[in-house]
Image 1 (cartoon, rainbow, N blue to C red):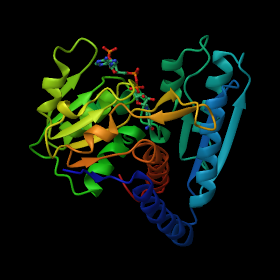
Image 2: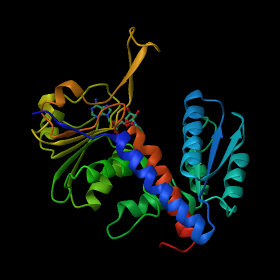
Image 3: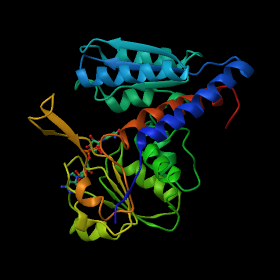
Image 4: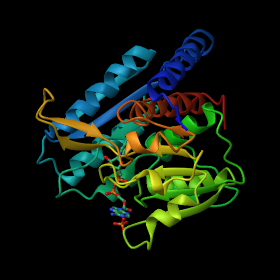
Length: 295
Ligand code: NDP
């Protein structure tokens, strides 16, 4: 069997077109331009790249964007004051605090300062709490997990009643993606570093989500024939033939697993492009909610 490739770039491009159309309508009918603010503390080069890419995407879809850049030694009070100012700014519908923050800052407290109505990253404890409870809806769902579900849905993979195995239990990927699958009535197993016999547990999965950060860990004999495999991992491995001296691989051994799986996401070009697309989607939802157009 050769798996059907789930093309995250193409699906993200489709989502951007949908967002652009909604933005045009929002501007024309209601005079609203969705606005996203990014808060960057310090000079971490990877964080700077992510923030720039988010700002560029805002421009592409017609959003207003504001970039707040604080020095690496900014105090807890200074960062919280910036977040509170953005909370009060009616032109801003989404606030994104770029993680990781410098070590001296209390990340949990800063994320908790973001108004729940503007928590487009979905990491506010209230949003995570609602995501974890039956019959409750968060205002925003964390972007990478939401992207995983969108890839499945838009590829026609049925979730309800299926066995889903999530490899990884982090707050930003594993746990929320498991909650989202549960909301869609899959039967969930969450694996982590103490799970016994991972290959056997993974082989039960109709849907396998890999978010461990271990290059090519998931092998062909971990995968049930025909399963849908979503590879969240982004790992650098040395490659002297590559221009930058490294290349990116996922948590799944793509070449092996593509012969067994029914659906498979590549790395890069699978989940990666979906994360920013879902951030834009959340910001649009924030703007619509602020205008009273959705609950
Ligand atoms: P974390 O390091 O926070 O979590 C990793 C999880 O995997 C933990 O739950 C850990 O278990 C588990 N784990 C680690 N090693 C093993 C092992 N050998 N066997 C079983 N379980 C193991 O990572 P993240 O969730 O933040 O990220 C996971 C991957 O996804 C990374 O490669 C990251 O770069 C990528 N990523 C990609 C994004 C995208 O946009 N595509 C966005 C975010 C992340 P335990 O809890 O027991 O320690």
